[in-house]
Length: 254
Image (cartoon, rainbow, N blue to C red):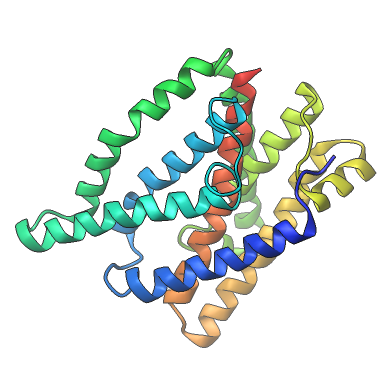
């Protein structure tokens, strides 16, 4: 049975909009949304996923304030903002690129949490199942896009977005169909129950993500907008990669 209620989605969406506004107002005026920023995203994404997994494993309580949605996103953003702030300060003072500082600080602060998570794993190899399936599906999308002339899927970062959401769909499919996990979200649960298999999430995710990426690329081409385009694409990637990695790691705990 779904865990999240309609009100949970309203709260999460409102918090997401507030986070994006704050980032655009205070962070994206200081850093470019480029390769360096994507590298700087690694520590906060890894920490957020690790904390969420430790809550799933029972090491931490499941609290919407900090360890599960929506609080885990706030925690990840706050942690990342602190690291980037330190990185920018050191970049101005010593000329060290900020993303290098962020990665170094992440390498110092995250391992204790990772070690706790590794200690909870009973079958680490199961993580490879959804990863392999997601990679195969993404490769199939790549070749289909070439044959069908769907050039927008080859735009910068779009295949990474596809992989992120295929990882989410693959982890859901394998977890529910083969390990008897439950679906936490309302609409996916409805579709899964109607289809009789969580494999339905794969074509559904492809259709939705493909449509969103098509509209996003068309909007950028027509309007010439770049910053909002990058913000939206990064957000879509994280909203797929975070849950997808979590779904895949859940398989290692059973």
